Image 1 (cartoon, rainbow, N blue to C red):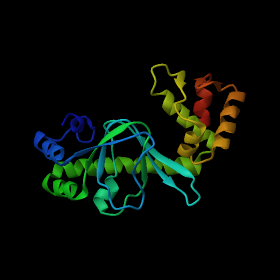
Image 2: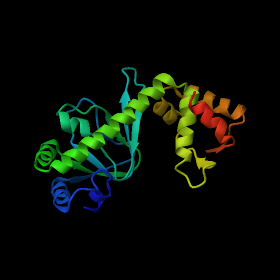
Image 3: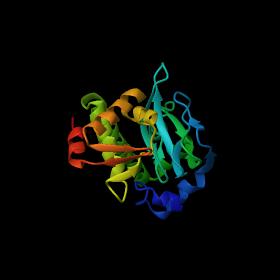
Image 4: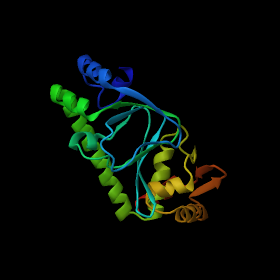
Length: 220
């Protein structure tokens, strides 16, 4: 109940609706690197992260990875398959030891029909996801790799107390998967930003030296 109440798009639901969700939810645990479900398989249900982090990603026929999102505690995923009854549209992997609550599709469909407020909440959350995907398409099609990298660095810095220093938190390969490119291009782009005096790379940390210049890069 506390976990469900902590989820932003479910927080406004009444006690009866939350209890109905809690009754049909099943807890599952995954190790770091373990697949939670695979694209193309029958709908695995609605997932809510209790603890840990998961990555949502697509794979090209050649094995190239595109990370669509990383979800943490209190966030849900796989709404699309639950609503349209189709197969899982993406791959999902645990990035660290992770526990999730799972609600199977038949139970979720039944609850959506019985509780209109829950239906509205799920639809609004799905609309928010659609906006994220529109932003992702914009980044991939209209921004350069350096621009996408600058935007990522700024977003990760804004999550820290000290905006000027923060752990990298991602390998070059993981950043490449987030930004729709390859590791070598990310490495060259980081060195380009460092050569221009915008950032400084020290082992596993990045220091933003010129935030205004990095913001200019992010819109290029």
